[in-house]
Figure 1 (spheres, rainbow, N blue to C red):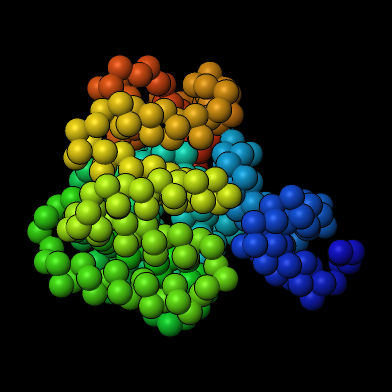
Figure 2: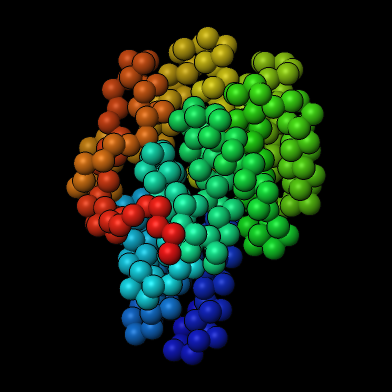
Amino acid sequence: MVITNRLPDFDAALVNCRALHDEGRYAEALSIAKECAQQSDMDAERRWKSLTALGNVLRAQEKFGQALDMHMEALANAMARDSAWHIAMGWNNIGGIFFTASEWDLAIECFARITENRRLVKVWSPYYAHGSLALCYLHLNQIRQGVESVRQALRLESQEIVARNPYGYVAFRLTFVQLALQGNRIGIAEINMRATEAYEFARLHQNDAHILLLSELIVANIEFAYGDHEAALQHMESLRIRAHAIPQLMNDVLFSLVQAEKLKGRIDRVRDHLHEWSTHLYPEGAEYAEAKLQIRGSLPTGTFLNDHLSELGLERDILSPLPAKLLALMKGPLHETA
């Protein structure tokens, strides 16, 4: 695609980039995003859009360090213009990178920048941030906080939001079901209601592999909780194999497998799944992980994966500090209400 300096062509290119990203054609999407970025130096809005698109594609490719660079530059761009909508999007995108990298404490810090800032909430629905917070709390085994966050996300759901991001509709219902099953405080009727919503939604999106896989994962989780353990585990294993074609869903499947095998008391299998989780994120090991995120800071990280690896005798040192350049952006009160 040839991109000119005319705005309609530029916008069409970004629409095409998003479509290719959603289809998993990341190399083609990346090429377009890079070309858009090259065309946008003299226009702040175009620059923000290009950096955001570039960061999203790099995140999907699990190039976390490069994705983080793009989204932090986009956030700096938004802050320079004092655009609340763009700032909220920036914190959401950065939080998403840390979540994908299993850095849940850092992700919570970023998502809370949205949910606890009245100015940002007024211009950008905190639906995604609340849903993402619930996922973080799930991984940190903070069930009460997670249930509160996912309920808030579901309360904020609208037809417009779902049309814009249908994946979130199923993803947040998976989070609800997993929190409910772990917390044992939500009745089976409500669990089944959310599962049915996801299942019916997936029937309308038969061509979306992301939505179909997550809806099946909901079924497998409920089957494990209330039905045949071995059949549920076989179902999860089949989803694990399918997730190799959709890398960003691998963590969701492995989390379910880890939790299920722990309940079965099969520590060897838990160890295997945690090891796969670790090597999936950073195949070259911990030292490469640190270089990949260009770590400079000194803040603590998420604990779920590290704690369990340590408990099972596996040494792992994932992404401990926060990069200094992000720390610089995070200066200022978290609970700002202006």
